[in-house]
Image 1 (cartoon, one colour):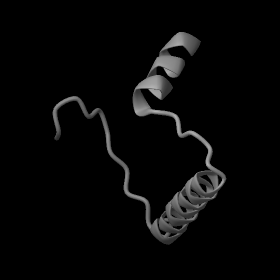
Image 2: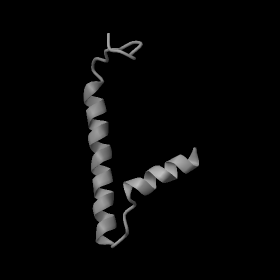
Image 3: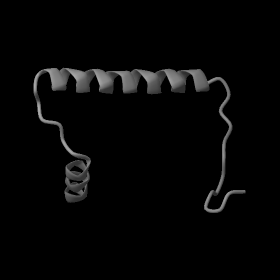
Length: 57
């Protein structure tokens, strides 16, 4: 048992659906990034994003 892990589960048959979802999501994010760069939009820095998240909590 891993330290700090209370329990684990094994999911059968869902791995393909999960991988497809992750691929679709990442592809959409990359496409949005490319589109924003072509339009000359300024990208948000990671530090600014984290700060924004912390302020929202």
